[in-house]
Length: 238
Ligand code: PRP
Image 1 (cartoon, protein in one colour):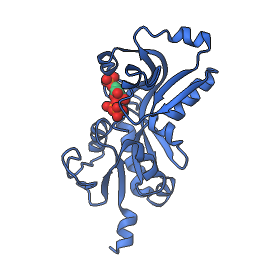
Image 2 (cartoon, rainbow, N blue to C red):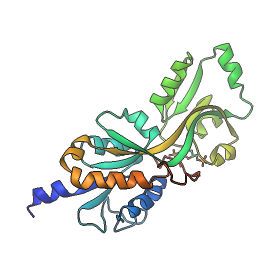
Image 3 (cartoon, rainbow, N blue to C red):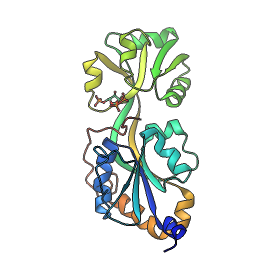
Image 4 (tube, rainbow, N blue to C red):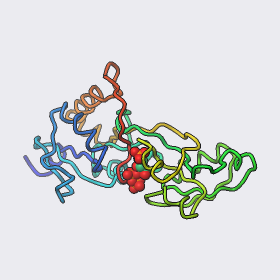
């Protein structure tokens, strides 16, 4: 087969390491696809599979939408948290997979009078890597906040006086608890979605559509599928 034809037929799946990868593997296995190497131990960024026409690229969680949007990957799996920050333009999002469930919350130090601060109209400083989501949330409440963008370990911010509160994901609640923080307000439920490049769907429909259908059928969110609660979160080193 000529190289351009082979590339046309090749399906590239963008995944991030960690929980999303772990929870996506069984869905791919049900579709007859298995990575050739474990991304946790391999240093390779492009990993083959048991099918000659399917390969994986291993990227940061927050980069998955960009690779798919620009067609460097045909499909991927990304948390709603990541998609909200990205904006989702140029992405077809056919299925909420129901994996990687967690919650996005406002949290602060135990004993912090969050409700009182809201009532007083106090201007809070809030540290987060979910700046778009946080901005929208507080704007909808009519609250003025100073958002401080961080890239990880948000829980530290209130402990060292960097911020009054954080907007972060909570799964087991262990990280909040270990740092004497409490969820003050629930923002939204988060889970991971299948995302697809719209041009790929047109050009590679014969191979892509059956795969999408198969993944959707076996996803925990599928009707009639046991919807076991997952302790894992949609995020993985976003
Ligand atoms: C996430 C999140 C919390 C933690 C919550 O961090 O930001 O820190 O997991 O999980 P828990 O409720 O089960 O304790 P992650 O490990 O993804 O790394 P990050 O700090 O880079 O976001």
